[in-house]
Length: 592
Image (cartoon, helix red, strand yellow):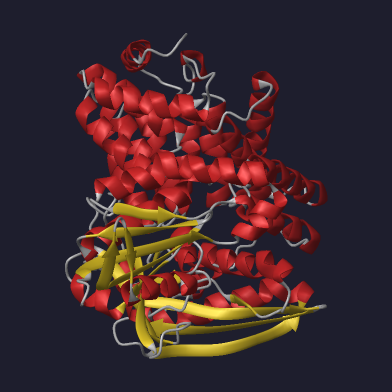
């Protein structure tokens, strides 16, 4: 007698936690608590939102069934984005990171469980996904291409464990889109328009030293080259935060050009061995993949600034061979000639991008060591001031009076020593405005930074915030959108989005403010500044469900949260803006 077997076609999502055994070995209770929190607040709600069914869970993973491949992939992208944003304040080695595999195939149903090759393939694809990444089968890709606002990188045919034939697989990821929509949760796959001047992105250089500890040095080389190129006012240069989203990935240069909206891409490598340094570089035209220039630069470590200059000058010469020498000299400006100070500065920059409280302390110490060696190192003074910006924004300041004074002192030194250094001026200006509440001096320094370097995305972001503080919301939005175009894939884009929240809020457009706050929270659900702005915006429009949702999340992050935590967070010029914000705070229901 034949037993009827129930089958159906389904999209299967398999996920597990990368490095779960290591995490449990280091901290069982903490890992379990973080994983449960992720499931409750981020993962399970997204699965329900996209009509998925959790078939079963294991200690470190889960199996989910969807009726649509489109729903499965969209859910996966939103989960990974939320996970990435939710752990920015935690050291990388302690973060919960999912690997996700998705396949469309025939499955066998037994009660509430599912079996078959469709399940096995999804599980094997999850095994070859990167931590924080998504891998989809070719069968799934055929179902979803053209129907999702997601880009796919061809991984070729993969040999999967216990699967007889090699299978083609694709890496899924969100891509940048138009100005209005690129900072929404789903980024359209349309290419960004090219600027009306030559445009370039510098990708992270490969560290060829064989020593992971030298990553900071390779990254610092690239950041300095980006800074040098960005001083050329005739050139459009993508910000470091966006170009570094490609770090460690095999990339299609033409696709990079479409996603970032640039004509040229510079890629290369750095090898530091003992007292010797080698930098290689190649400039590629993204429209056709043609190599316009390639070269290798060797020298002693003490000559590293000269090597950077050679790379920069070669790139400039390839793009605009008839450029005046005076313009080329602008790109050769170096903030210090003391190698030890420069090394501390690079270490500090590596720390600051980690975004954690401990890393912020280390960054400040490294920048201060740099200025002890070279007291005239304006950029290091500016970055010291910026450390206090992060401290205030994240609620890490222990002694407001002392730290405000320290921030202002560092900012004033940076401004005095770096009159022609856009980075120093921008960081100093925002520290004066945000931490010391000196809006006029801060705005003036940021304006000077933008005159010196119109490619500095951070300066446009700072300018947008300060314009919102000063009561000019329309100009604030214009400047924040400029920051987005210069860094369309910025992992910290939720900070820019929250600046737009402020602008709409202080213009009295509370519904628009709430909409933008929710966009920011899709990028980082734990961003307290966006949560409080969502709460006050919803409160003033009577959207009590949205208000309560934001307040509940704030309480989950900090059970002791109070109105007083946010009362003085924004240095506002207009009394009416402060009154509106305070009214919204009272309506949130938080204790005073």
